[in-house]
Length: 70
Image (cartoon, one colour):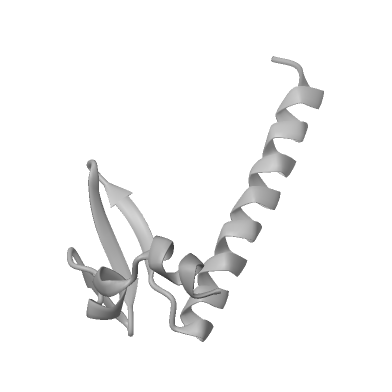
């Protein structure tokens, strides 16, 4: 791998990491859970906690029903 390619990959990784961190912070500010997959299992981060179960309102949310309301 050339040095130019390495430099490019480092820069793209930095850009992607910054975008993810910004999105995570915005979700926290808005009260939206950050959802991760760890070993194939969904993990939810919300209200300062990490849980394997989503918040109740998340379980109750049905995007199909919300679209019909519009």
